Length: 168
Image (cartoon, rainbow, N blue to C red; front, side, top):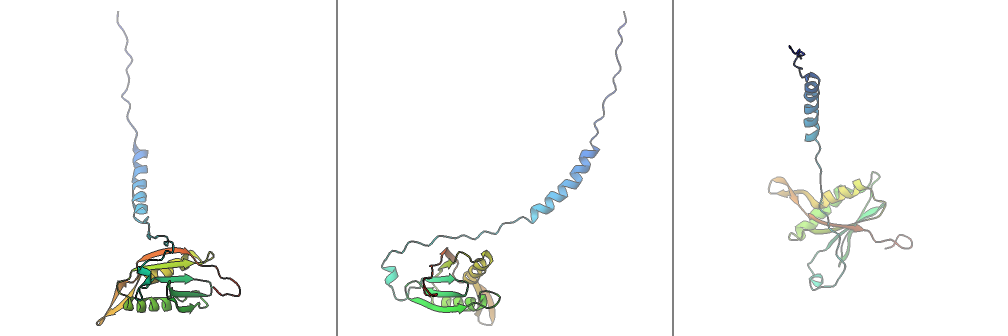
């Protein structure tokens, strides 16, 4: 007896739609992956105030920048206020701060630490601008203007609360 076998045609795999998807998707993913970079600034919290022999040195600068709505106060934690830079109509006077920090760096070239204290309502953009001005600046070396590190190790914290009529 003869058995009948069904003839089956070989199925062809249709991958045209998948290839079209890959052709569109790969360039898109590659183009977006290039532009997603993160900028990270390393910060440390200020240490607790504990008296030590290092703090008793006269020529030891402990730079402290207090960002307030009406001014930026630059001072030495031990020596007190160095200069108060009033804010302009557009916000804090960053060029004046940069100039002052550069002068301090020429007086204390071996120092690299600074503490940034900001009031709670200070904007993030203002804090980053102040940090950029404190971390690096343009210094004149001979006849060239070079970008140099000023105080790259920045600790960040809350500004002391003012009591009374604007007095610290």
